[in-house]
Amino acid sequence: MKSLNKEIYRNYETYPEKVLQFGEGNFLRGFVDWQIQVLNEEADFNGSVVVVQPRGSEKIERLNKQDGLYTLYLQGMKDEQEVDEHLVIHSISRGINLNADYDAYMELAASQDLRFVVSNTTEAGIVFNSEDKLEDRPQRTFPGKLAAFLYYRYKAFKGDESKGCIIIPCELVEDNGGKVKGAILQYAAHWNLEEGFVNWIHEANTFCSSLVDRIVPGFPKDSYQEKTEQLGYLDELMVTGEQYHLWVIEGPAWVKDELPFEKTKLNAKIVDDLTPYRTRKVRILNGTHTAMTPVAYLCGLDSVADAVNHKEVGAFVRELIAEEILPTLEGSAEELNTFAIDVLDRFKNPYIKHYLMSISLNSISKFRTRDLPTLLEYVTRRKAVPKRMTFSLSALIYFYKGNRNGEKIELQDDQEILQFFSNLWEKYNREEIAIKELARTALAEESLWGLDLTSIPQLEQTVTAYLEDMEQLGMQRALEELTGASIK
Image 1 (tube, rainbow, N blue to C red):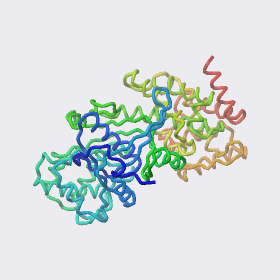
Image 2 (cartoon, helix red, strand yellow):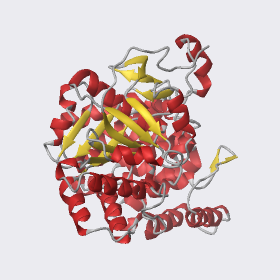
Image 3 (tube, rainbow, N blue to C red):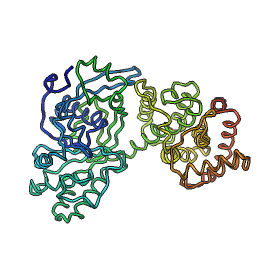
Image 4 (tube, rainbow, N blue to C red):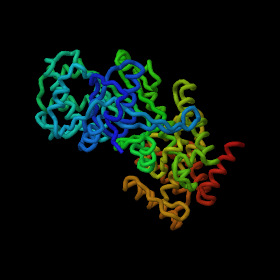
């Protein structure tokens, strides 16, 4: 069987190289490069992508071997129906191996067609390294590589302000655009580059923060053979992703003319401020993930789909979103409800196995950033503690007891946090403290939550009552008690 390349797949046009992409991984190929293809097909974007690697070069070589082509499977819920579809992505023109062909990278810097830079180098990728030098081929860090690229571009066009770039990082970091720009300016100072270049960075280039949302599991190991037989060719770069996608780019209104998302079916937006979109995603999607995890796992469930399809846990999740999370958010009620429906559909995706134990990594800090703001806002607005979110907080404390039906839970968190809860639950097991003291101690620990939660009226008493139910009845029965109480 032949491998996918332009000899066996010819049904596409070639476009000018308008986008430089740092990252050859699954996410960008299942998210950004797919959207560039849709822009070409539906909005005459007329651009292709050149990919360079932030680190190793193995995928770049495979990408070039397949002439930039790969198959994308989009699987999941769409309009409440299961959808499994695939297409060949042909928006990538080539990959440049920075270790072997740095000259090609420099030639691209002088390209008249180039306009955009996108990246996804993980949260740890946007860093400054004083060991990076301008003359390195290549530099160690992504910002170092980009700073050198932009400097060569500045020199090639003699500071022409019309030759700047629109830079759109996709790393999951708040103010990712600002952080990339800050690192570029650090390198300019560190390398003693001229003031004209610094001014060109400010005046000719636009750094846009962005928010990305799509689950891209990547290469389908479990079903690759079946998919290969269906397609009739080999594809080492096959990618699977969910149907849902959202790309929010914070930038000036004129960027809409250059990225004409509004002419397409894409769920992508250019906005003045992405803060409401970030808050919505963090509170509804990520916050629900974190809130459901200890409850569902201690009910004997293992995945997100298991949780939302379970009678009691599913009801708990839906009511948590509808009655406690959405009422604490600003913005259009219609948009919030639509997003919440999409989230629940995504949770039910039969094609993606999202394990609760994976979500449980660093659950304390996740609860603090994703769920505690909801709890505090609810208390401010309603003058009462939210029952389900408080139940989730109680379940989280109980989860850190480290036991599910007699089996040890492999807790994953900072050692100080694990030791804190281990000592606390050992004292309880030795009958040195009662549940009431355990709850008070856990809630009062400001290093966990950023404040003393015992200061919130009725929270300590409510958590104590829920922990007593969990200890005496088990999580399933405690949840049933909660549901019954919420119906009365």
